[in-house]
Image 1 (cartoon, rainbow, N blue to C red):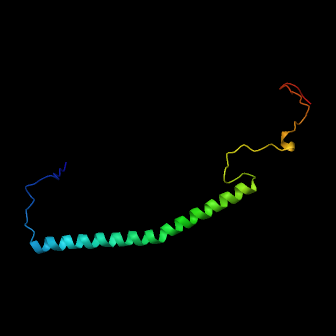
Image 2 (image 1 turned 45 degrees about the horizontal axis):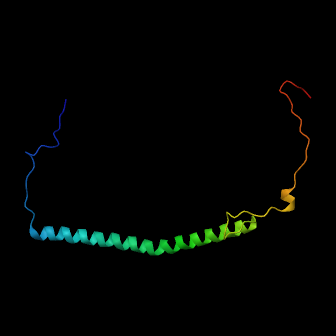
Image 3 (image 1 turned 180 degrees about the vertical axis):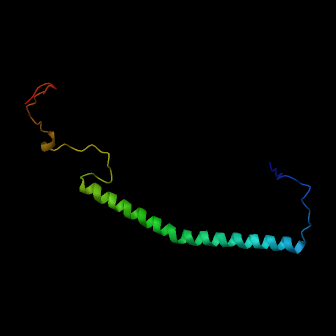
Length: 103
């Protein structure tokens, strides 16, 4: 069986990093951070107006459909006055059909 010791510190060498190399690494990290920020900001400048316009369009569509359904968009949960046609009682004759009965 082959065993590999991943935490073997005996084979690790400590190397002192020159000062210019550490400054170069920090400058590179800073440049990468600025680039990520610029990409995120440019995406936000493009996407935020699109999301706002999409939300305004969806709200306009919802209000239009509510008006078409006869619901007041300003107060959608108000109780409506029942029309005479809606308030009338429908009279019908009902008959119970038992499961064993045949027509």
